[in-house]
Image (cartoon, rainbow, N blue to C red; front, side, top):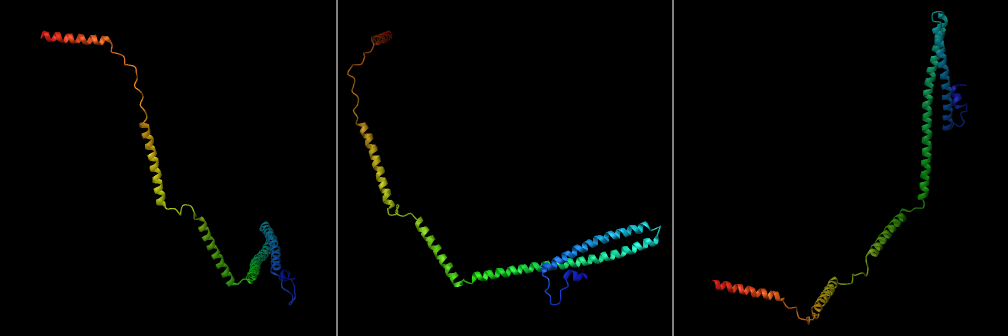
Length: 222
């Protein structure tokens, strides 16, 4: 069985091809198998190199055979490296294709859902509905503005008349204050005491007489 047959199967010409998921899984299994083969060949190359070094001077024939085997293993290893690169590229392409398929499938599903949602919608009805909503919002705003205005609280009174009435009240209060002050001035004064004041002391009269005598003596002496 060839490597391609092992990877993709031996289906006939009319057989159904594998799905992307199946092909990706097969490629991953092949990558794992080739990676193990790589590790095996790397070990064999290291062994043959050690044999060649060991028999380099003692047994040249054995050393040459070891180097030949080493060269074959290296060639197989290089082929596996190239095969792994190709498989990796193919697997990534399948994964991308599978992702794109799922994305397109989901986008188609969403498009059908949108179409189904819009089947019962009429653009004219939508315009009418939006216009009705706008009108109702404007009406609600007008109602709010009307309710917020003060009604029946001072708007029917003349401010000048109110100020004149306030001046009259202040003048009336001022007149009352003046009347209270005038009433206090008309209150009766207290009565004069009936008893006589005490007389001046007699000593002061004597001092006055002495002073007059001294003044007369001074005049006569002149």
